[in-house]
Length: 320
Image 1 (spheres, rainbow, N blue to C red):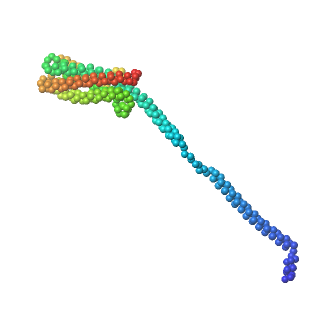
Image 2: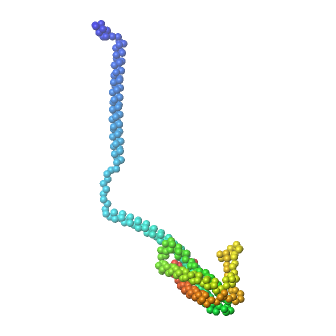
Image 3: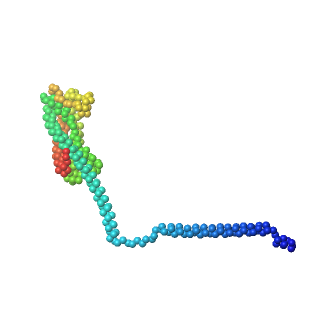
């Protein structure tokens, strides 16, 4: 044992050097671990401090709680007045724009209406003259039928054939129809003009009513004519012209035209049946009376048209 203790105590210098190196390594390892822990602690502390700083910075961006002071009541009244003025101004501006547009449309309608009325007055003058002629022709025809066996056979056939012919007066009322169908009659701002237009419409409706009676009475005449008169003579009296040209300047209206002429000689009735003659005279009398009513309606309508044209010129001062 002594030898071994001695041996340990008197170990070689190399063994001492080796032990010293091991000790140094242990110390370095311990110091490295301590430094690592210290560095990690410092990093954690630094991260915590950065988080606090970021949190502090974020809190700076929060909206502060502001205390709203109540406005004086005068400011509320001022704001209310400004809003009302803005809305009212917009309303009046829109109304003004519509008023200007409606006024332009009104004048366009009135100008078109005046044109229609002028056309009607010209046509009414022609139809008044034509219906007066018809009344005169029916008077003459009735006189010939009272003595059918006389020497007036040619005139009798001619007037009898004309008794079923005629044209129907058509009002030029396109503008009035447009005003009513589109709901734009409200654009007529002059009440006097609007009232006269309504009266003129009544004239048109009155003529339509009497025209239905006229058409019915015309149909009643045909059976008597077919029984009393020679149809072959009627056919010889007709002259029909068909337009076969393609010249627009000479083209006939509707492509054809027929005229009635007096027959030659003194043609007579097929039979002088007193009952048939009496029935025909009655129907002609009824038609003549209807013609008189139509002429009176034409006069009234023409007067209203002329009056309306004058009122339009006075109120709107349109330039032709």
